[in-house]
Image (cartoon, rainbow, N blue to C red; front, side, top):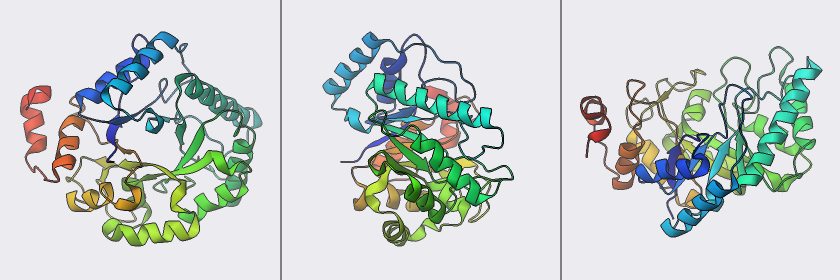
Length: 298
């Protein structure tokens, strides 16, 4: 089954129910959200009645709730323990996010592995695994390490680095991987032959560890290490490559999540990009249509 959705909002007054309704408006059958602002620690209580109402609506609409995904906030950095207080803050905040996921009935949390900020890759990998070992297994939530572009001192831009972290994690049942197509391109992995990439991934880590795929085009050339997402088909990767990933049989039951940029920072493109991917037909005029008609285009 094709599981295709996008990043959606999670607001104080509507919470999971609002996230679901936004996803439905895009024609999606899965989605990803942050349980609060990704740049800060501000969080509000999870309202059980809204969660239960959302779950009921998902059942009515045929949503596979087990494949809905939460993204951890950006401010968590397990890679850096130079300041022990900051490291322990990241551990505690990630623990709290796992608790919120469990309250929401979510089983997958995507996490950026972190940046070593001068400590070096080896130390960072040890720190990340150390932090994960302090919390994994305390809740029935699997942490999915996201593949990164290699910008700055990011960890996780190579499959070897991801593998090294997973190898050091004690609870193998609650650790996995989220592929990001833009990040993979920018890290130097050519997505033209995606099956060859999957073969490499399977040999190193195992395809069964893939729990989510972020479907994004890239503004950047291969191996640029820049991490700048582009709308589907309008970047350097192109529509045909992304279609080959979305419809790859080896990942058919894995949620595919769009994180493409808003057009002119105003208009969500997801409804139209999802439709393009479902139809397997690229619309080269899509961006101009969205600019002209906003959310009213049919």
